[in-house]
Structures are given as C-alpha cells and as structure tokens.
Picture 1 (cartoon, rainbow, N blue to C red):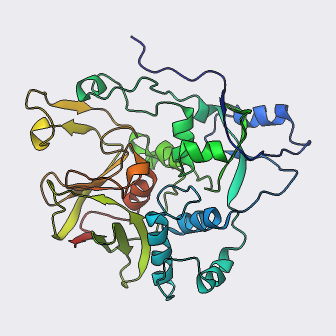
Picture 2 (spheres, one colour):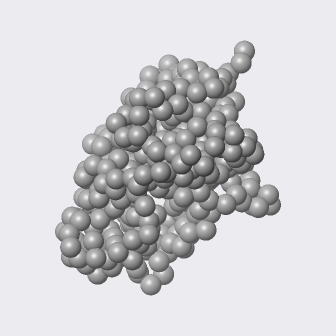
Picture 3 (cartoon, rainbow, N blue to C red):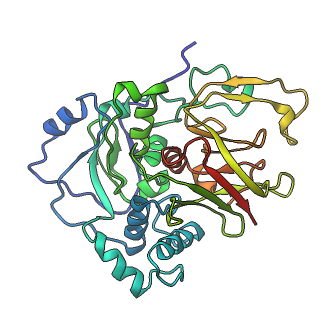
Length: 354
C-alpha cells in the first residue's frame, strides 16, 4: 500500500492582500529556481511595497532574535506579549509587554528587517512526501514510515513559523500553491544545510524545513516558568538569550517542580508509545514504536531530563502552545524546539518553577 501521496501540481488559497510580482520576474526563471533540488526559497521581486503591519513586523523581529511569539500571525496574543517582555528584559527596558516607544526605539536597530517575504516555492520542498489521511490512532501511525506533514500548506506554515490561516490572509483567493509558485509569507530567512558529516538522521533538512539555523548561542541554564507560561534560556553570564512559549503540565499531570538537567538530545526521534504512561488512554491499547516526523507526538526533538518519562519536546499542534495542557512534559513549537536543541547539551540545567 502506498502510504505517502503528494499534493496536486498546485492548490488555491483564499486571502485578502495581493502579492505583486515584477514583470522581470519571469515564470521560466521562477521554475528554474524551483527545480534546482534545493530547499532554499528564492525571493521574488515585488512591483509595489508591502504594507507592514506593526505587530506582524515586531513578531518577525522577535522571532529572528530568539524571543519567540509562537506562531507569527499579526495578533497581540499572550505569546506575543511574553516575547515582548523577554526582549525588553534582555535589553534593560520596562517589561510592559507592549510595543511602547522605548521598545520601538530599540527595535530600530533591526529596521532593515521586513515583516514579509515574497518567495518562490522550491520543487524539493513542494514534493513532500505528505500524509493526507494522517491517522489519529497510534497503532495506525505505527504503520507509517514517517510521521510527515499532511499537505504542502501545513509544511509551509511550519517553515515560516505561522499558520495556514495566516498564509491565506497574506495572499489572494487566486494564489496557487505549488512548485515554482510565488507566495507572500512572514520573513523567516533561509538557513544553510549542514555538512554531511553533521547530518545524522536528516537533521539538516529538518532545520531547513523549519527555517532554524544550526548555529545558536549556548544556553547554560533553562528556566521553565509556569506562571508566565514560557521557557527561558540564559547564557553562562546569566543573560537572557532566548524565550519560547510553552505548554507545561496539567491538573492531572502537573509540571515536576525542581531542578533537573538535560541528559541527552534526540533529533528526529523515534517515539516509544506506552499507553500505561497516559491516564487518558485505554489499557487495552498496545505499545507502539512510531517513526520520526514533525507530526509525531513529540515533534522533531526530545530533550531528555533526568526525571524518568519527562522531557522537553516539539508538537504536532503549534497553534495550541500556551493554550492547552500536557501530560507533564514541556511542549514547544517544532521550530522553537529545534532551536533549543541547538543551544543545549547534556548537563544543561533545567529549573522548573511555579
């Protein structure tokens, strides 16, 4: 049975803003760029400037600096407020959580960072493979060779740290999505591939598909703060260098308060699904071994803690981060989990606090 299936050559999406292409940006040139076998998104030229929504632009700047707003959607939600506070704390500003005058003045250092890009979708990215009928049951998931994205739109949303709905809103009802097509997206830059010697388990391609650079500042300590709903990373001098919105525990499975440490980092991990560890799963279910993939239960990363069965990991539902509960572990978006994986090492302290 064929498990994976690609999308048609293109699909249509609905939206409100029209991407403008330069007459010099010829379809043949776009097709040549898209067919090069690369995961890099070529920038297309626009004939008219984009409107720059201030919140969207602030989210993009924050994301590029490591103060993640979660999904980039142009909305002033709790994750955006937390990211602003993290940025403000790192730059000795009043932690208002607002895009106030002092914060805007500080962000002028990154005045050259645009809110959006107009990109050409590369054929290698559009090729998938995808799992359009992704099963809910773990036993059915265990039959898949990889737990990949359902479709191209879902993959594009993760690549640009956003949601399918936001991509729809940034484009027009007639915008086709497929290899060689032009699309307006949040400005998350491309990253270089890993050298073959460093590319275990396809991690280099995963980083490219998430727009996460392999080189990140080193974290000396992590703090998971339940009251703020965030994970903070500090360097050896105690400086805040990154902040990520997180889902952490529930009433039934509370966050394990205490000081732990990272025991290991598993990139593109297999997942050993044990129903006995989950109170909300039937005892009649059998244990399963699930293959790697961004739509697996722990996403693309598992950071193992020295507390059995607990870790920090990615998710297959990035829009729920900070808005849902977990089974006690700490969940991040896949792109934030991948970034964190490049910042830590075995022995990194992880403080869980209320």
